[in-house]
Length: 250
Ligand code: G
Ligand code: MN
Image 1 (cartoon, protein in one colour):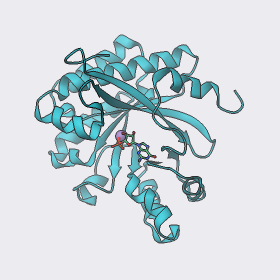
Image 2 (cartoon, rainbow, N blue to C red; image 1 turned 30 degrees about the vertical axis):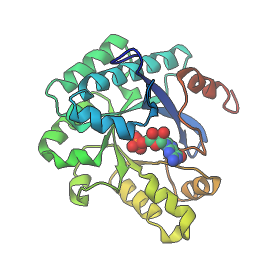
Image 3 (cartoon, helix red, strand yellow; image 1 turned 120 degrees about the vertical axis):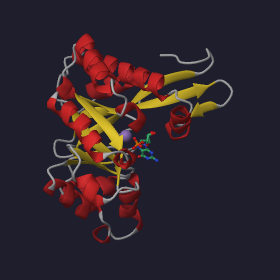
């Protein structure tokens, strides 16, 4: 997948997401990467905000969705129809009037199951009109697509707005997961965020899990899913598929 000048390449990597209870990969998050000939690898934290300002987020976002759905068809070709691919969607992209129609058309073209797709939105999305956002998210949900609130707990949104959102999943930001290593785990907010999320009917993904002790704590405290370097770094497409083959019991 290439975008812009020949020298700069946009591509996707896929980071496994572990189902904590079964200890198996239940899906992947698609993560955009930009390799620039001049500057080397540029992190999405840097290029996504620039793309948003320069009005490039729509074409870049389209390429990301395309790549993620393509990966989903590859997973299906390997016989795995149970895995989810999560796609980060910028607020600007989500609020485009044709977003939903375009996404659903792609889903039909690729013949993928909407149940295998999750859209991740960050808390910045809540700065927009809640009713508009909820209508879009509600329509996506009705089509079978799941919605995750990304980077939960670090944005500028009020809790009241967040709990009214039409989502199915909370992704707890690495900031909170790091705290499990810095202070006594029972003094962190991690288990409280998880029980709050569960009460609201969300399933919980912990992000940025880098140590076995964090995963142990998450498991003991009923976390649904975990993602982070301890489980796996983001992988190129073929390596991501290999990682499934190498799971115990396969
Ligand atoms: O905003 P979002 O949570 O989608 O960002 C995910 C980013 O975090 C990706 O760029 C990914 O490479 C990075 N990441 C994923 N797992 C870890 C981890 O365990 N530690 C660190 N430092 N970064 C991670
Ligand atoms: Mn994300």
